[in-house]
Image 1 (cartoon, rainbow, N blue to C red):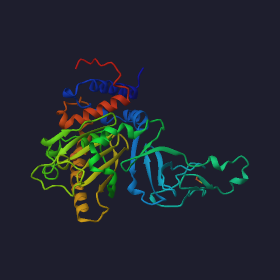
Image 2: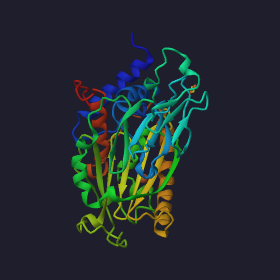
Image 3: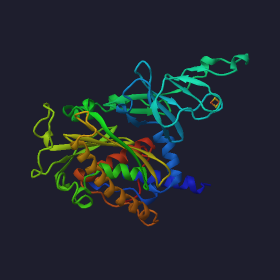
Image 4: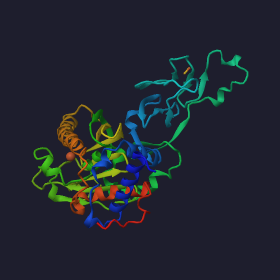
Length: 385
Ligand code: FES
Ligand SMILES: [Fe+2]
C-alpha cells in the first residue's frame, strides 16, 4: 500500500505527465500540491536538483586568487574558491576529520583552517597539516583533502553538479548562447550582489521570473512603462533553457550605451531566460539582473540576486538607479508570490489554463523540463482531460 508520501509523489508525477503531454496552445499550470508538498520537494531534490547543474554564484565574487565564498545547497556545504593558480573550484566545506564546516562566510585566504582541531587545507582543498596525526600509523594525509564537486563556468556564472553525473552544461546551452551572443554577457562586470529569502516555492519563483504575462499588471509603475506585457515574444527555447524577449516600449528612452554588435531589434528588447532549474536572467541592453535560487523547504526559497554591467562601476548613478529599479519590482514580485503561496495551500486548485506562448509558454517549457527529469514525459497519458 502507498503511504501518503508515495501517494503525493505518484499523483503529482501523473499530473506532470498529463501537463507535459498537452500541446503548448492548451497548456495548463500544475495543481496546488506541486508547490506545497514536502514529499515532492524531496523527490525533486533527489531526481532533479542534485542531478542537474545548479548555479551557485558569479566569478565576479572571486576576482583574486584566494577569494572564496561559502554556501549551503540542498544540505551540502560548499566552499567556492579561486585557488592560488586562478582556478575556480567548488569544494565540499566539510572537514575530512570529524566533519566540521571548514570555512565560514566569504573573504580571501591562502589556507583554510578547521576551527575544531585545526586541520589545515590549501585553496585546492589538499590537506596540508593535521596536528599529531603523523603518530597514527595508517593515516594518509594525501587521501584527506576536501572533495571537489564537478563545476562549470558559463558566461561568468558558476555552476555545480552535486552528483557528478550530469552531461556537460555548455553544449546544451549552445542555442541560447546564439540568441544572446551580441549582448556579450561574458564581458559584463558584477556590480551588485545581495541575498534574500522569499516565502514561496522555488518553482513558483522560477515561473514568475520567466513569464511576461504579469509585467503590466503586477509592475504597473515599475516595468510596465518599459516592458509592457503586450510586447512580449517567446524566445526559441531548448532542452536546458526557456525564455522570452521583453520588448521595450518605443516611448521609453533608449537603454544604452549599446554594445556595437547589437542589431536594431536587439537594442529594443531584453532577453529574459531561465537556465533550468535555478538561474534566471533578465539581460537588458544596459545591465543584467540575475537570480540564483535554492529551495529551503516547499514554501521558502533562498535567493542570491545580482547585477552585472558593461562598466566596472558598482557605485555609479546608473548602477544605483538600476539596482533601485530591481529592488522595486522584486518587492512587487515577492509580495505577489508570498500571497500566492498562502493561496496554494488550498486543496481545491487543480491548475488553470496558461496564457499564449508569448506570455506563459516559458511555464509550459518548465513543465516539460520537470516532466523529462522526473520521468513523467515517458508515462502514458490518458486522464481524459
Ligand atoms: S573536524 Fe575539522 S579538524 Fe577536526
Ligand atoms: Fe515580476
